[in-house]
Length: 283
Length: 329
Image 1 (tube, chains in turn purple, orange):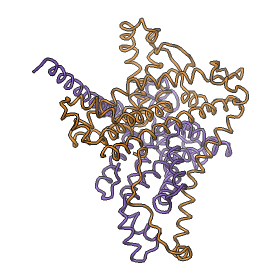
Image 2 (cartoon, one colour; image 1 turned 90 degrees about the horizontal axis):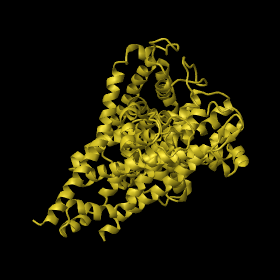
Image 3 (cartoon, chains in turn green, red; image 1 turned 60 degrees about the vertical axis):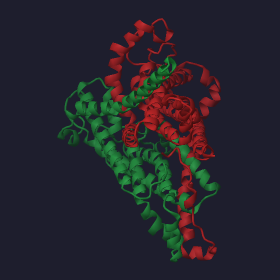
Image 4 (spheres, helix red, strand yellow; image 1 turned 135 degrees about the vertical axis):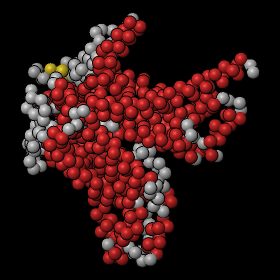
């Protein structure tokens, strides 16, 4: 074997090993994050964390019950806004339209999807906070809902499109009207995919912090109703992490663990649901 | 992925040749109208967003004009606002992030697409997807308590003693700053580069590789000289996508960049980014000019990411079409 060939084989092996190392590093980051959060947050997640209000500044103890409820309310509002628009919009795109209108809608959705989350916050501030003259749960939920729309819309559309044409034609041949076909054949056939799309969109906005900073703001107490500023887990993590108190840092770790757990579990559930489905679009 | 969508021609809408009247009676036209309203609202919201940003940044646009982008004084007390330090910080941190993330991400994508058996590749990709789902505030949390101390104690002193003659690695090691923000951003965008690049690489036709191997190329030579050039545009797309994410990223950067509007060649220096200044000062902005200057920064950010995302999508679509169509010919 000539030296040249030996050298080429060496380079090949070396570079391919390096690519393996790159992949290893990338995946190791995930386990590092998980491990670190479990190690630091696990000790601080207690019953109090879920049931108590934040302690006054300077005192130790307390929990984040208000932030957990606040996050739940924000996410509920987000789903109420994002899921219907995403779902029905996707039905329009996949079933009723094919022309320039669909192009415009898709383009707008992709554009909205790429908007930095902080800019979504500015938009929600101008549209909801300013007219009501109040930071509120409503404004925060609106901001998160906006972010859910494009994700739900685009993936739901893909899953609807993946339903075989023959199913539609079969239903229509039996005399079903088009909307009847959609409601009783197409959507049920794609429901796993649609559920996955919604869950992934949910998981994506559950951890969003930037759009909440000047819409939901924050609150150290309970936030009754929908028109008051409210605490939320992501914003709590932010404010607690950059504060100078050790006890707050511990709570930030705990909140981080709870939030990440929620998001990763939602992601995994979504993917499990999908992997058992039949109609899977080409990704 | 929502970004790399292509239409599936086999399953389009089934609109028969029935008359409008019968469609109306069956409720089809109503369903069409209702879903159209939902779909149309997406367009409406997007237009409204652009309009709002434009309208609400009227004052600084007229008072400072183009000077807004090239002056570096940010002084709310005297109502003087210049965006240069923030633009500089945003560009520098994103640049550092890409310098780290691109080789790592593409390397990992090559491994996943070319070397790893399908099962291993899919499993690793699953973890990469989970990594992409980790919210930015968590990266910020780890940035504050892990990366910053590590930078201050080990990495920055080491860089200073070895490469300190370069202007990039000078000055006191605070831990926070451009370099730290860049590193955290790199970690955040690597999953995006991997996911998109992997798909692009997988779509490269198999005969391209086989031809190279048959000519006596080593595995690496076929990857480096044949597969990568074939997938070049798509990989560029993934990089633009990552760049757009890095520019718009708020929380993690805000927590580690140091939040000081400085322009310094040293990467150790604390800085500021567009998104970070909006996050920190928006609720405290007193006076219309101050608030609207922040909104104009938001507009800048929007336009930047809009352009980058557009280019990215174009590049990815071009490559995947080449991979599935022309490559077979």
